[in-house]
Length: 306
Image (cartoon, rainbow, N blue to C red):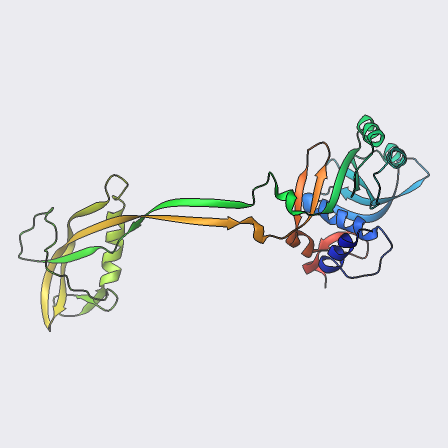
């Protein structure tokens, strides 16, 4: 067995003593579970074809569940140092011809001879490579995503209360005098008897938010006068002052934000490729860390182990 394949299995699945090639088979089972998460994936299952007497040991089986038509995939795994030859493909074809799955795969680390590839193509067996990830495997893939956003951000509004006896020009900007800052949560409106009512924030915030809907890329500032439905009172130096509305000015600023979504922070451990190009997938650390096997050989989430 490839030493790195064994180390990957020991660190991310389970550190256990298994015969040569078994850890590779179980890694392949996890890869197929990653591809078919809604299906049942089982390592080392014995199957017979319909009305057949011969029992076959299948390295990995994918079985759909909960559907009217059951779908089955058979996978043969070969962790060998040489290319898979035609004899291995021919032997597996004997299994496939008896069990008649919907799909069949051979998975290996090195590759396939020309004769093996021709025979597999003739008989509809898919050939795949599953091996250790190399940095060169990033080629042609999206590693980082650069995201640039133009955001229109509302600035703090300027508000000036209007006394009950003041004449109003609805488009007059605020005075150039420095405005007085107050806490909107600790400042209150009163009724004419001097009873405390809602604070500034409770009353003014929904009004300002509604007015701010008029701000867009063409109109970055709005200003005007908003009349209250009823007279309100504020307490200034112990005196109640009647307020009938407020002048407002609300502006926005354009903020440009750039983000880099770093795919490199996801640690790729394995690469799974089907030679016909239908699958080319990186298997990340997170993919391996979350799976284990039941006593029956089914790939299950580690969190489901009691």
